[in-house]
Image 1 (cartoon, rainbow, N blue to C red):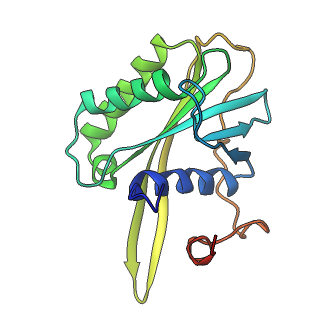
Image 2 (image 1 turned 60 degrees about the vertical axis):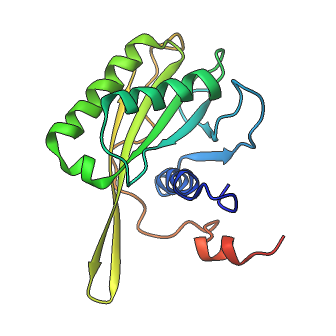
Length: 187
């Protein structure tokens, strides 16, 4: 996908992988396939069966629109996530949207309303990736909010949160490879 020019969307998937890895949540990437089964990640949820997960990315150059957020959520649900298994969506937004209290609240409201209408979704995680130059280094961090559904058709007694509120691991996971490693490998 990166080679075909889908850089921001592909990078968002890698950022979701980073969020999950640094919090010890097991998953694997899924190769695109047929409609309704073309999600990005399969998460081995510690609390239940696997969760089919799709990543959507609002481009950094785009203007905020509640209708645009809703459209992205609909596309994930309609085109990519299966109807018979638990589903989740990760929605990457530009950091400027997260920095605006009004926009940040509106995005969360759209997601909460959307969850009420889709019984196969267990959660939507909204995140923004921030970067700050600090001397001769760059500091990276994520702002995330995980919204879980209480009306989905899967086991309602389970906690469907992927993130338990703990800080990310301070050490790099042993299986970690860098973006530089990925780009330098030859096919």
